[in-house]
Image (cartoon, rainbow, N blue to C red; front, side):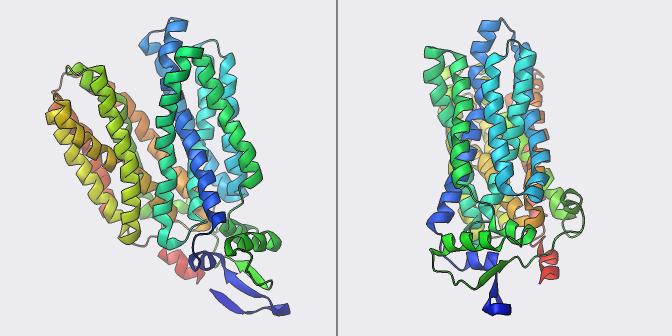
Length: 452
């Protein structure tokens, strides 16, 4: 949106309109690629505790129960990182927070090499989790602010698929490295690779144009240089970029629960909590359920792999459908499909060949919707509070992930039949679906209207 010419022949251009009116440039693709690599390395580090746990247990003579703090500490760190780094990204910028997050989990993972007991390793996993918790929401925010609105949800979900691909790659690397070089070698990789990426991010990652226009409008030369890179050098020298949005009068965290965002925020938090509780419960305990019911380790591994492949497939498909439809309705339908698929798995778990396609569908709908709901969060809030909104939704969801991991063990020891157990597991997906169906169509419209 261009305004009349200003003094000196300059004219102002709204940043988002400028981005929306152009095809995706190589510069924007670079930003998406850097965010993709960041969440992919996040995926490797998220699974790091699981990869090294058997070797740590054998070397330190631990029981399974004694390993629990190592797993829980990472989840606690990710929750703290999401809640802390989001507001910082809205205050100080996306770029510095991304760099700090990557540095945090890289250094903490390398420092784990000197840990000699569970307490020390758990403390360092908290620090690594803080970095991981801050990096992914910031990557979502930066991607959302550099892509055209017409393709935003598709490109966010493509970028976030780096997380599941990174997790899968981490498993492959661990299977080759740990038997040959020991679990310490995996820590070297898990910490060294993020620090190598940090160098690339420092050299190549830009600040968000929308953030600069809103929070740092005096940096006109930086804004013009970024606009030139998007326009391929064809930008008029008189162009001055602005953000046609208003800034909240209160802190971003308080604004999340103020009108007109309160309803959308609470529904989003419920969805994140419920979705991640199901995701972590299924991902953590599905192999155990299959082996306990008489299935082989090979069948358990292959079935779990189908869950992961389904999640990547679902993320790509759901994001594309969301860009052409009402996003919250698409997510609501997907959660209901997940509920049905999980219940069918509960009936067919003893026959892996029968259960496998429904595990794939459940993974596609649960993991895929989790990718999609991150994209929805990025579109729900304006620039001034976007990073806080995405990060706090993710942080609330981490409570659900911890609950899912803990409840799974209790359900397995409760003596319930697997059909009843899976039906219970599916219930949070129903709650998430209802939350998405109740989501306002344009939660951010009132603030946009005030800005206009």
